[in-house]
Length: 237
Image (cartoon, rainbow, N blue to C red; front, side, top):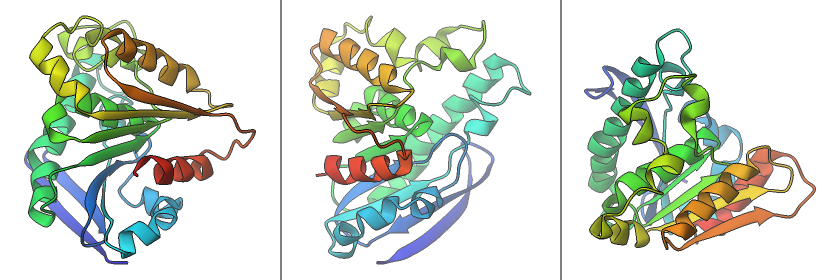
């Protein structure tokens, strides 16, 4: 399996960011790690191994990126208003830098975005806000309400990055139709402490007639990385 690493100074973030690329052809997958982790996390915890056949046979190409959650949503050393501003800079990094990089490496227009835990939030939120960029969004144990990271602070930046808030009030039919073209997958499991997030997000999507799949695995297993890897293999197809 081909694996290369690319690093550049991000104009959006003002710091070096790294991308790990696995495979050399096939439907591209943009992968987001858990909160504050780096691009090598998916490989470390078996996510690349579980789809190694797809990567080696050219069915998929995987692009794993760094998270900066420790500088944004999780950064208790700065004011909440600054946390959400940093979060928006990360969104710019993904949309203005990472997606063009993927397009340079891969000519397939259909892009899957997938994430685990807070990365699941990023995956779903980015697809809701930029539906033309993505064909499928997979949130595994995603957290879709970021107000828990903001304390008492709430402004337009929080609102427009909190899907449980802005989606119920979204009434622009052209944008809703674009969102409805994305294949949303909300995955969780029986003993997942984040399971209610998936169910709540599913209810909101259903209210807006946004087709999606809510997939809560009825299993006793609690090893989240083992479950996430199986969910990834199930939902990228």
